[in-house]
Amino acid sequence: MNYNEKVKICVDRLKHSKKIFVITGAGVSAESGIPTFRGKDGYWKNQSPQKLASPEGFAEDPKLVWEWYDYRRRLIKGCEPNPAHYSLSKLERKYDHFLIATQNVDGLHQRASSLNVVEIHGSIWEVKCTKDGKVEKNTETPLKELPLRCSCGALMRPNVVWFGETLPEKQLREIYDFIKTGDVDFTFIIGTSALFYYIIDWAQTVKNYGSFLVEINLDNTAISSIADIVFLNQAGIILPEITKQFI
Image (cartoon, rainbow, N blue to C red; front, side, top):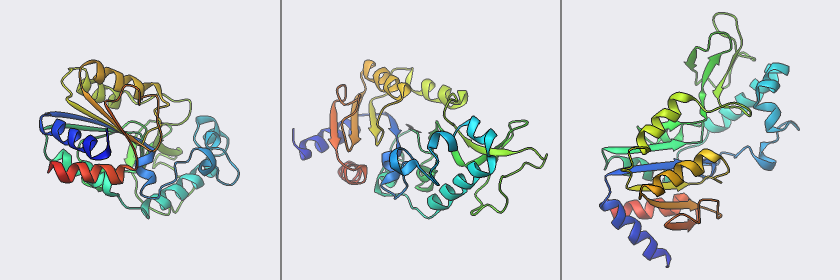
């Protein structure tokens, strides 16, 4: 099946679908110039991501961790949503039931005007008090005070999921409530290496219920074998073409 045939099938399927589920990973953000922070890009000042993004690393040196997150926030603020983000936003407007579950913490889906976004790893633009768990929005860049402190005097931490931590219950519940009814017609899995068990579980769940599964990634993953269609290309190339023909 060639590229044009794949696009046509996706468009036809979307036209006959009422409920759309989308999973996005770091590959989508990478097309906006945001480093993945895994592999060689994850090292900063010779520190590994595990040390800079873990409860243990934060307890040992909160200032260092906050310096890294301040650096990340400044990088992200200088980036813009790409055609993949905007294409998903356009698609969302055509459906009453549309959900994006993203592994990304950068907020680019929302900046592209997507409304129904579940951030399963949290948001880099939110901070959480280490004493009472209170969450606040904070978009200041650069941060004036490092490490950041709450008004109560306790340390604040980025409201993101670190190594060794579990996914937030509220966000998980929202996703499972969306897919467990078994009526998701079409599922996109975009820019994720699918190394996490829950990504595979969500894909397998909707597939078992009969959802049409489309993967867009630069390389094959554990999901490729169960996908109905696989595009080995950038999402910023594939999604605009599908959206243009659909809309």
